[in-house]
Image (cartoon, rainbow, N blue to C red; front, side):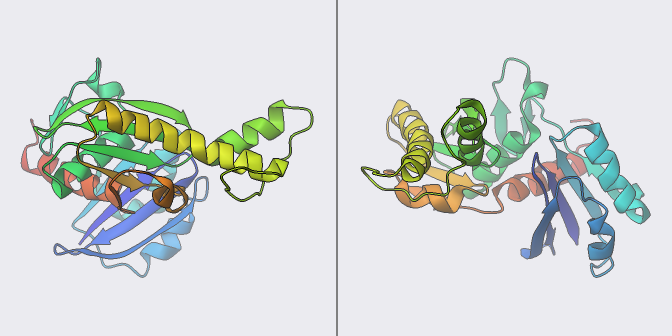
Length: 243
């Protein structure tokens, strides 16, 4: 059994892999890593605990403390120049967010073609992966909820909208919600066209269910995309400790 942990800005996601497939997954709020202790009481002892963390040292320390009995089994994965069939062309490979790196590795495991890799969470990232495994680069923009909160915080009259998406909104709440979703899908579709309109979009993150039906391109919702890549990068690292 391998336990994978994706520590993001808002949540700590976890998933258990039994060697054949994912058998359980869930999440706790970031800042509530202590809840993992109670969850772990019901999990089989893992052969390995793999961590991808973008939330800072304190978040990683809290996760390690919550799962202290398994400390010897921990491996924190970091972005690198190569791994799991992906070549990282970032100017400084180690500065690529490890969640993006894991998602690229997951995408490479799921498709051999050119694709877009989109994580729609607190931030939305839109990354291009060539058919030969090269990560070409990508975009970062505020996520849907972050856009909504920014409008409510930084304007005098706009609310924190709980509207609906429509083509031509006639309420402010709907206009904000629709505008934020259009901004997300527009960025994704423009990136796809820059790839020559090739391949599919692999989509993960909390906003993925809202975005997927609005995208005018081939899209596959893969909720555990980061976990798929984390698993493969972790296995690679264990098998090649110097590579």
